Image 1 (tube, rainbow, N blue to C red):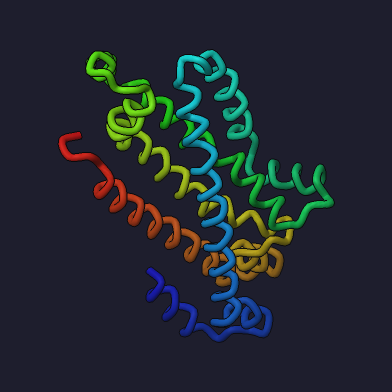
Image 2: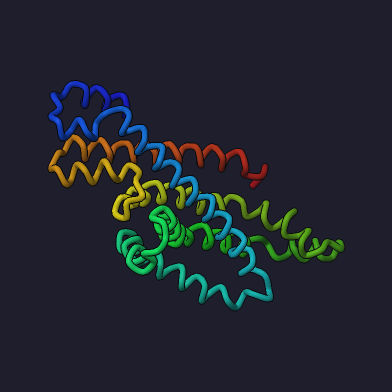
Length: 226
């Protein structure tokens, strides 16, 4: 797809406005910034959502799972562009990159947290009871039985979140955090469809690439027989 895009752009006679956005240096810098933001947001989501999801399936904290998921659902229901603008207005003292990261983490945390909880809840209780009967500790049961058996469901949530994050990170341009959204925004502002299409196609290719890599990781990490 990128090869087709390259030849399509190369075949066009670009005016000065298009050349500002459709040159290798600018596209590469915006792409690298987009990947950087996506990576930071994705890592933070995993570091927050998975431990919280595990915690909410423990007997002591189980009663909080409903309220926590409700709050996460609210953040997911708010349009992503509205969420990032809300943070930009409410936390004007923060760095633009921090604003973008916080907003996207809140927006993408739900699928991973929900699937972590669902994956742990679907583990057969009889297996856990048998492990308890063998004298295993709660921590041992969690790490040797529950989490491995939950991997397929958890990874499905991770895969969904990663794909969503690639797309939503394009909105970082609205707070000046950069990324491929800059190219898309330039195309809209200058009414240059070629610029708009170029930015959109690169975002789509990144999302498809990340989804493909996540699919490979899912197959590798899936326990045998599950």
